[in-house]
Amino acid sequence: MNGKLIAACIIPLMFTACSGDGKTTATTDSTKEKTQAAMPVMQDDTTVAVVNGKVISEELLAAYTKQRRANLPAGSTRQRILGELINFELAIQDALAKNLDKNKDIASELQLQRRNILAGAAFREYVSKNPLTDEQMRKDYEARMGDLTLSEYKLRHILTEDEASATKALAELNKGADIITLVKKYSSDPSSTDGGDLGWQSEPDVLPAIQKKVKTLKKGEHAKEVIKTRFGWHVVYMEDRRDTPPPAFEEVKDRVRSILQRRQIEEYIDSLRSAAKIDIIKPAVVAPAQTAKPLGPNGNSGIMMNNY
Image (cartoon, rainbow, N blue to C red; front, side, top):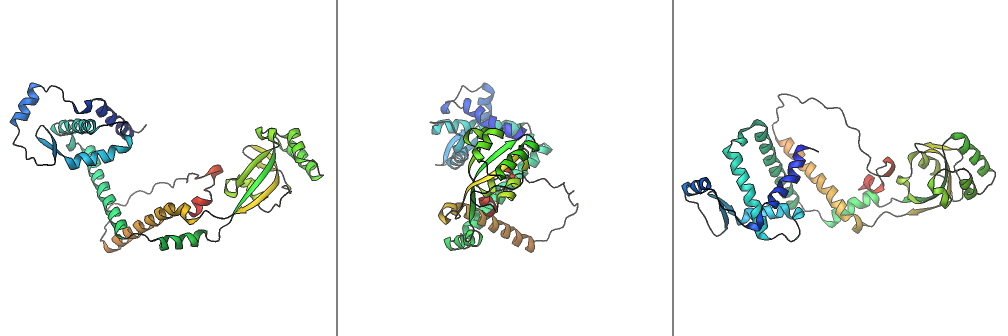
């Protein structure tokens, strides 16, 4: 597991475990001396705690609570969350006392965190000032999916480990033999107990090699060749097929908004780059292109991922 991920997971748990629902433990003499020697603390109505002279404000507590909300233990009280934040503050103060922020790697990470937060804030502000209308989203939806029809197939198949067996099964099917009888005779697939029934599958979910051969088949027809896939050799029969319309706009509206907002940010970045003076002193080494990961079953991106 990545070291940063470990820290992200473990640190809050550590601070939660010792937060004590906001109860404080006895301070050491040295801590008391440091606190007493600290300069007067400027407090106001938003101050919720003071740790070795450092104020923790209501705003900071609220921001921390919002950040932690999804991972807070059930029934977490305000005092427990404050206890966590105090523990963080103590650790931060110790890190600063040890000049850990001067460490080259840590300083770079701090800089990157600050830049990420500022960039995120800029993106959110741009999107909020340029809200998408339903009309814009619907227009994009209709351009991509208005005339789209999705084919679905109800297939049966015979799966064998060798080409010869599949060829024999196909020859018998060509002569009019019953597909279910042939499945029981030849198929090694678990679906053979159901007559080789693969159920209804949308076109993108069908194995590519099979999809090519069944695309033009009508109900009651079968592929005229045996088909090889990583699972073995197939004889495929089209039991039924149907065309279904694309999902309604309201069903994918949030997805449409997300896509268009990403485009907005890309346009925003393009406008900033066109107005900026950029001098690249040391060009970065181009890394080898990564192979795209499949987004859907059988290595297909799926109809929705292709369009939204």
